[in-house]
Image (cartoon, rainbow, N blue to C red; front, side, top):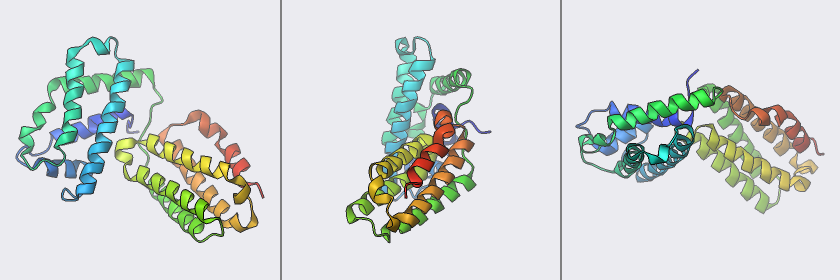
Length: 247
């Protein structure tokens, strides 16, 4: 199964970018790497931000798995180069003027970091199949409509719908965030559900509870496929039983 740990995700992004035509506009290169419209300024900004967040997260992991990481100027400069690439996402200049930041030391650091991460965490994250992502997204769409059309208070409907939109964004940026983004989104949604259990256990919320249970089931399947959340997954059925069966 494909390694999808944070360091592996960043390495895949960098290797893909490094393989692009050096004479192409830099913003077009990043558009192809992440599959977005290079002329959509919002997408450019969003992906530059997500990329930078990933680099910062990887930097933390590297400092954990590599001995004396902080004492190496080569390591520091390599990470700085990776961060600086985030500011090239909107650049119309040729990719040749930016891809020099992907030096051999950058590639060696990522490869070494990935190997050490895998050695320390043999049950690391794997990539979720597209079918699991599609089913989760569909169940979220259905839950959104159920909440929107429900008799729940206006404030709660607004908050739950906002939580679902955040979850959908986590799916949109899955290639960068990995399962961490979806875990954070689901944690927020479950927390909102739990804190408003009195209102959600009413008869009027039967359909919402049913649709929420389906979302959790699809999320459970996706996370199982990603090989993450081991302890949470063991307790998940009981968590949902307590949340859903309250009427």
